[in-house]
Length: 390
Image (cartoon, rainbow, N blue to C red; front, side, top):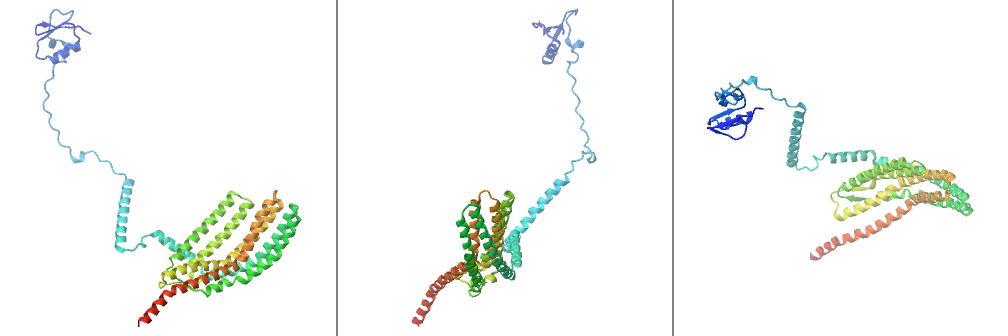
């Protein structure tokens, strides 16, 4: 790199300068008289005359640019085309919002709170389907079949439990237990006779006890809850069978099937009010409505008796056979014996249910007659007062 000596306006500047520094002086002090010299030159020279600094001369001002002619529209760059799928989504969203707004306007103008609630219509259709499927004629046929097969299942369960008790006594070295199991025979005969006599009493009591409700809303809600409970019970039994596949799982699954059948029966009875001799009338007062609700519950209990008897005895007979086989191969027979005694109690409870519900229904209607008499007293007193005023 060259080392230049610089003279500015007749005065020599101190130090030596590089090419770049000289060029910088030429640009910053363009109006000054600059002279440069370096070793090898004969004399001082104007840096503008030297080839090293020719590029440092300021370029002449460029003429004003001529404005370019406006590009023709055809020469414009093509715009990006919108995504068809995005446009369809936007259009669908606009249609959805517009449709919802239109339905809202119709809803506000109509004043109908049910016409636009599709899920409620689905529930109504479901209840109508169940009502038509489990109608009164089918309920009566189910009652007859339940009584018929229940009368066969009860003695079978009693005989199996006699064998169960004798085998349990033998395995546990308790001949007293084996002998006491023979008591099941006369007890079963008495319980079966009571069930046979009172199974038809509930139906006659229902026919002789009409009642009223102001609307079918209570009946529909009861039927819906019972139907959902039946589905839940069935799913619970299936889950128990899958998670614990064995004798215990099978017994629990059989019990869940019986409870599911009872709840479906209750659903059909509630949705068919004529099966309970229950009339839906707008003329029912608040007191009659309360009486109608309690009467419905009692009549539902009476209506369920034949079916519960049949299901209870059939499930009990199947469970007794299962427990008998379990007892034979069980390592700990005392645990199986306790479970078997519980099932035996359920079977006898099913046989005694008709008699017990008959007594409960009579006591209820006795208190109901007293309540009706009390409710009638104010109106009678008003009539007496009106008669005295005249």
